[in-house]
Amino acid sequence: MRIVVLSDVHSNIVALETVLADAGSFDALWCLGDTIGYGPAPNECVELIRQHATITLTGNHDLACLGKISLDDFNPDARRANLWNGLQLKPTNREWLLPLPPALSVDHQYYLAHGSPREPVWEYLLMPSQALANLEWFTEPICFIGHSHVQFAFRCSRDDRRCERIVPEAGSQLNFTDNARYFVNPGSVGQPRDHDPRAAYAIFDTERQTLTFKRVAYDIKETQERMRDYGLPSALIYRLSIGM
Image (tube, rainbow, N blue to C red):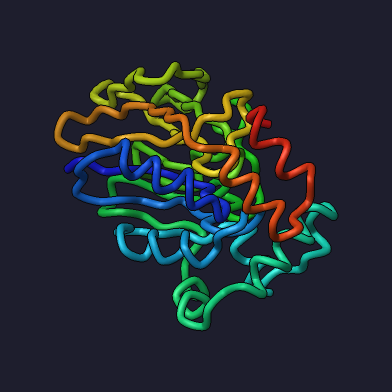
C-alpha cells in the first residue's frame, strides 16, 4: 500500500490541496490530528480529510475548537484562532470530529499518536530521551506522531538504550527493514515550524517498508490573505512565511 501520512493541517486548505495534488495516487491516508485551528478554512479542511482519510486522529487544537479542552491552555493568539475555528464548524463536521481518538494501533504493526504514545494530546516528542521513555508505551516497531510541526525521525535500538535523531532532506527515505524501532513525524501541512515554510508530509510504502519525506511549496499568500480577511492574529499570519 502507498499511504500518505500527514499531520497538523490547521485549517490551511491551500496547503492541504497542494499536498494531495503533489502526492498523486495513494491507497490510504493517515491524518495524525489538528485538522483545524489557527487557519482560515476549518470546514473545507475537515471535508477534504473526511473524503480522503482512512484514519484520522484528534489533536489538542481540534479538541480546543470543539470545547473538549480549555482554551485557557493556549496562548492568546491560538486561543483567539481556535475560538473562531470552533464557531465556524458546521454541525456535521463537528459531529465527525468529536469521537476521533488521539492515538490508536493499526493492525498491531504501527502505532499512531498525535503527540506521543504516553501523552497523545500534549507531549512534544522532540528529544532522544523522550523517545526512549516512550518506547514502553507501545509495542509496534513504528510509531507515527505529529504535534511539533517538525519533520524528523528517531531510530531506536532494539535494546531500548540508544536513539538516533534523523533530520531529513526533502525526498530522502527511511528503510524500516533493519532491526530497530522508529518514531516518524511527517511535519506539518498547514504550519511548519522547522524553518522551511513548505508544506510537509510523507509517503509510506508498506510493501517496500520505506518512507519518503516530502516538501511542497504552496501559495502562502493566498492563505495569509484569507486569514487577514477573517481578522485572525497577525503573528499567525506572519509565521507561515518563515516556517516558524
